[in-house]
Length: 269
Figure 1 (tube, helix red, strand yellow):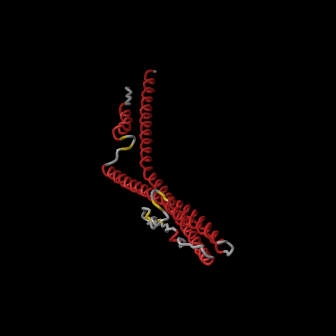
Figure 2 (cartoon, rainbow, N blue to C red):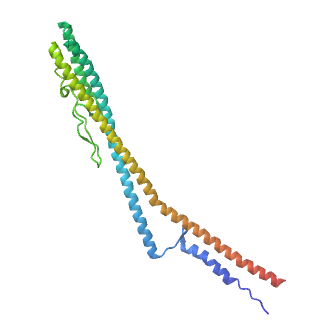
Figure 3 (cartoon, rainbow, N blue to C red):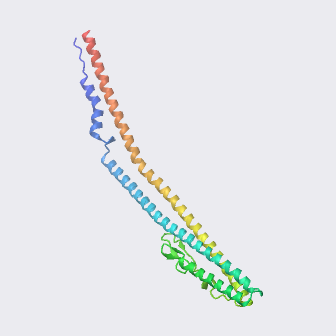
C-alpha cells in the first residue's frame, strides 16, 4: 500500500499570509478598501487643517505677546522718567519752603528762585529724553498707543511736562508766592504718584495677558501633538501586524516541512 505525503498544498497555504503581506501592505499597513482610503484621507486632511489653524493661532499669539511686551517695557521706561521728575519736584519743594520763610534775604530768595527754575527745566528735559524705541513717552507722544492685538489692549502714558503739572511758572520772590508754589508742587507730586500707579497697573495687565497667551500656546501645542499622534500609532500598529504575519507564515512553513521530513524518515525506516 502506497503512502502519499502531500506537503505542497499546506506549504502553499502557509505562504499566502506572507504573499498577502508583501502584496497588500505598504510600509507595514494593511491595504484598505477604496472607501476606507477615502475616509482615512478625509480624516488626515481634517487633522492637517486643524493643526495648521493651531499653528496660525500660535503665531498670532506670539505677535500679540511681542506687542504687549513692548507696552511693558515702555511703561517701565516712562515710570523711571516719572521718578526722576518726582525727585526734582521734591528738591524744588525744599527750595520753596525755604523761600516761604521770612528769614532769607532778597539775594538769598533770588538764589532760591533761580535754583528752582533750573530744576523745573530739568523736569522738561527729562520729559524730552525719556524715549523708548524712538518714541518720546512723557511729552504727550505716548497717549493711547495700540499694541496690535485682537483684545484691544492699549498703552496710555499721560503727558508729564512742567506746564501739564502746573509748575512751569513758579515764583519764589515773596513768602506768599513761595507758599503758593509749595501747594502747587504738592499737587504735582501727587499727580505723578497717580500716573506711576496707573502705569504699574497697565504693566500688570499686560503681563497677565502675556501669561494667558502663553497658556494658550501650550494648549495649542499639546492639541497639535494629539492630532498627529494617531498617524504614528496606526503606523506602529501596522508594522506590528506585518511582523506577526511574517512570523506566523514562517512558523506554518516550518511546521509542515517538519511533518514531511518525519514521514520520510518513517518510510525510510
